[in-house]
Length: 253
Image (tube, rainbow, N blue to C red):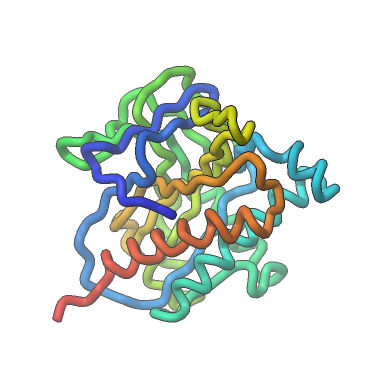
């Protein structure tokens, strides 16, 4: 399950793109009053960091690209299933050929950076950031408290998407990490826990960030079936992110 992780306890340590969490959830939110159609933007394939693909391949014979695309698609689908019950939702996977050009344009129009979250102010610290722009990734080698955040560098991007798709809100899935927690090793079962970490940013059409953070869920190293991994981890993560969106955009009555 995904457990709430408040601002003052948001501790995502990373080095060489590895993340360890002391709790299950990190987020920061702000109030919003509008509610409308939401667009889900799947993570760029470059932003898939996994330590389980070899094990999955041994069990399923899926290639790296097939495993990555399976998880990328399933995360999008789970979010769609959660959101469409409450609000009109746009998924690039519903018409991937037609929308592929727009998705590529989105990736080139935003930048990603590991940002510090100031626990006192609930805002990111812009110091010591490395960014990904137009497909180029550079990562700092340190143990700062960070999560992957998205910013728009093309001023017309969201207004263009709003006009074309009538989308009021945008859920950017910025990165998917699947990491091994060796400190959780259990000698009796000869197993350990793995962390699934989804970094996300939710914006409205004015580029205002209304929620951002990282949702984390766990599963056993004994499990290497992609479908079961999705059911155990992606479902609760999608539920949490969807609830963050719905809570932040709930119209005051």
